[in-house]
Image (tube, rainbow, N blue to C red):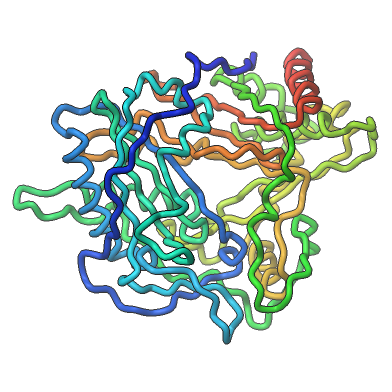
Length: 461
């Protein structure tokens, strides 16, 4: 039960990528120039996120045709997503970040090629530093030094006819759910009907971010121990480097649960003493990882040290009234669970799952509104021992393009010991293969050894 992921072959870090063309793409129709309000959830997410989407060769859609289709599709989708063609700016009057929806700024479109085939670049699941060559997001020669685009799309073709679609977007633009919707809409605009007209959008996005504005006056009705207040001068934006670790040597490994492993964890989580625990795949995997991570961190073997795991919760269905599922911004808040190392090591697994379950249940309408109002009064970030970031069920690889679904979709991984990533398997066509999960862990060598030891130990309990 549970294994250490073994890459299929050696990793090639130099993908031999050449950038051939860089241009700006503008909305295909005129869009109004206007500022866009950004709620408090967005205000703390001013950093870029890179994702990659790999496609096998399709003889009907060689890379040059795909590239042109994507250029046109991006231009079309910039009409409903007009903020993507704009820029982020500080409103000096309100002292808040906002989108300047200015279509004259544009999104960046890059055309590149690799001297390798898709098979030659190696295992797509295993995080490869070379993947950063597939989405270049710094020092773009057609932009002024201080011009920071909100959206960059790089299409890189491989010798075999396959290609990679690399996106770099400012996190303020999307959360994982709304980015999936964006991809569905981009794919829809890559299709043409018999008269060469685009198909309708897959989902019309909801761009009204005032739906997550703080209440007036703000009412913080919970202590919010999961949030850390920072002393930041009024009008000065938060620095995303708060999320980064100090420079240190980190080992990284991928631990793997297949569907039967997850079902076994669910059975282990069942207990008549915790009848209200929500025993989901996410909750049992999170509980297992939390247990290992907390105990690997505990160098002094302090059994009374309190460990806190953070994880994102989609608040769209939890608000009253519910937020539209098509909401095109960030609609996730950080929930948490806390326990002593003694409880995590000696207590029943069912109790740990119950704590994680309670953390998710805590995020109802009032708690979410209180957290948003906390951000109106304070400046700060989520506060815990580590954040578990799940890309597992986002479904990027299920988006259907004219040339087919991606072979695999993944984030470009940065090694951070405070963040553990969950991401899916490559879907090989088997009905349940994609139900398994890969757990990416980066830790200093001593902690990594302890993490792996606990990971194996608890499987035998």
